[in-house]
Image (cartoon, rainbow, N blue to C red; front, side, top):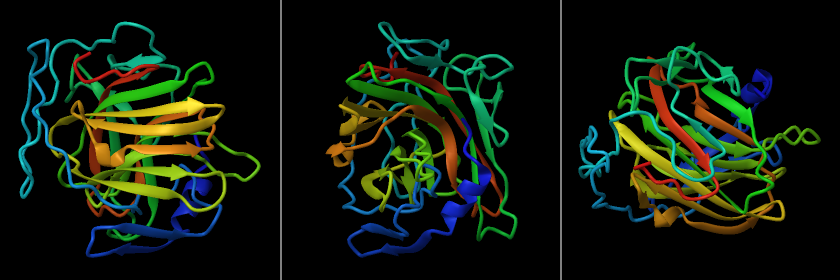
Length: 301
């Protein structure tokens, strides 16, 4: 179910103040009860971590392993790309490599999301997620390009979402990538868990049914101009999220390990990009090899 655009645009106006302190803490002050899954992924509160380095091994299939380097950032760990699109063994909820000319019918589609053979982590195509230039030279607005589907997680005590993303260097540094959420029609909010980035670092945001969102920043920069492997894991108990874990290129980001409970019902998955429309030139993000499963997936499967 695609969220109404008027709801999305309204969320931008509720981001009232962003503060960056010398300790690299990001704070967002918002009107209580208005921040849902559609809110701009523009800032984090909570401590930023010390960063995580990896000695991750090359792809098990001997595929096209790629190294990334960013100015001022240490060389990134190996990304597990190349070879055919594939699904892990065992039970899965969703496995989609976005192969072929059309997006699978399970998905609702927003803002130009489409498959493309121009680049891919595996297989022969990926999901293209275009963000157009802002209307006024890069200062205001809101945009999202994604696919969305309804899922039932009630039978699972854990759920993991693994995907590959390629983020261009010339892009908005404040975006959401993976949303697990529920549309609360009583309050017209979108409580859930968001994996994304703010000011170029990875982070997690928790959106409640009412009240202020809580966000947590990692010390790890989002790799640019290469395929990265991201995985979000949540533990569930009696309708609440009890634990949250995040992996980048098969290395756990311990500074994003959170312990609840966070009383949130999850019954939707959104995969793509969403955030403030403040990119004067626009950009295109690509996503690929999405897997949702009740156990850890990792980057080699």
